[in-house]
Amino acid sequence: MTPVTPVTPAPAAAPAAVPAALSGVPAAAPSGDRIHRVRLSSVRLPLATPISDAKVLTGVQTPMTEVALLFAEVSTADGHEGIGFSYAKRAGGPGQYAHAREVAPALVGEDPNDIARLWTKLVWAGASVGRSGLATQAIAALDIALWDMKARRAGLPLAKLLGAHRDSVRCYNTSGGFLHTPVEELLDNATASLERGLGGIKIKVGQPDGAADLRRLEAVRGHLGDGVPLMVDANQQWDRPTALRMGRALEGFGLTWVEEPLDAYDAEGHAALAASLDTPVATGEMLASVAEHTALIEARACDIIQPDAPRIGGITQFLRLAALADHRGLQLAPHFAMEIHLHLAAAYPHEPWVEHFEWLEPLFHERLEIRGGRMHLSNRPGLGITLTDQARAWTREACEIDGTGAVRELTAATG
Image (cartoon, rainbow, N blue to C red; front, side, top):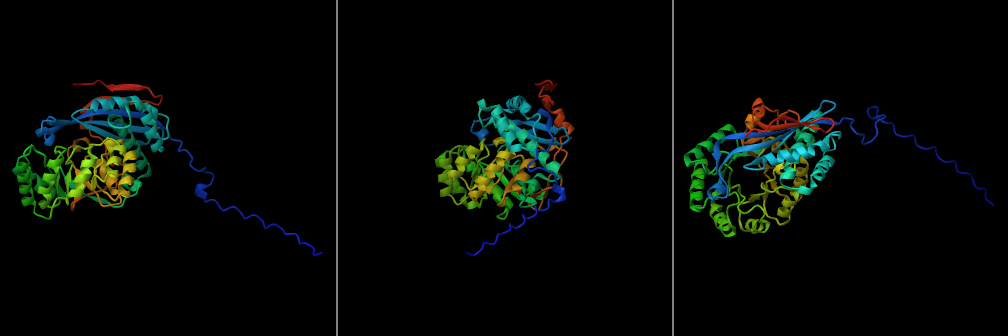
């Protein structure tokens, strides 16, 4: 019988050395910092000129004279701060402020880094009023403030924290092309925008008389020439037959897109129109949740999607939607709020557009750099914005939630 030679087990491998910088640090450790104060402000920004688009000319709305903004300023026990905002046009501002005032105490004592979890917590704090519209628009200001804080803590512009694909984004002007503007002034505004460094011009259409729209568009295209990107926006004021007829009439102008030709929730109609026209169809700005945008995406209802981070619940929700849009290969052109959307567009994989409105400039000390047809990221951390004294002066209501979750009024409401 052949003897069996015992096998001596090999010595266990020595554990890999832990880098000194990580020694003693548990995985996924909480930051230790906690939210200890939230300030909310309801601000009314007056517009120099009453604004009219097709919704005014068709009698659906009255001219817009102001923008209501909800500002959220969040700070932590370690002294970190972030600012975010949402907004409402014509109606909804007081409602956004009231909802934020009710749910914001849920943030106190929380780790500010856990933004997705905190978004969900805020939604459930006000779940009885739903997960879209005014409720999530109120949450958006808080969510954006947390993202601003996170990027500031990292010492990075928000786009860099998210992972930028570019340091500048194509930009176009809208504020000079409203329907209350006479044609000669429209042309002057377009020239001024291009001289300022913007890359494209958008004008409003959707008047009851379609021929009047075509005459304005002919004047603008003739003034700009064929090389300047030109967009039109009907603000949902066409029915399906009119949208198809006008869309075909617009084909010869070489438009970058035709925006909101139909009701914002008519995914089927938008899909049929997009399949019928060579001109790209853009829509989405009026939708108030990721779910509503998903219906557009699944119906293949647009070529260019136009989400608005404050309207859909903030940056956390915008990133969810951007991933869906990227998966479908859609172009991106976020609506309004360029101070936020520059960063989000810079982080989108496909070359996007961002909309230029100078309306909010009196609220912030900083200005965005525009040159060569593009809006450029600054090296300021976070969103790179701070509030002016004028913004404080336009405040109608304000409150502060302290470290105990108690709400203290800072100013009384004024008319």
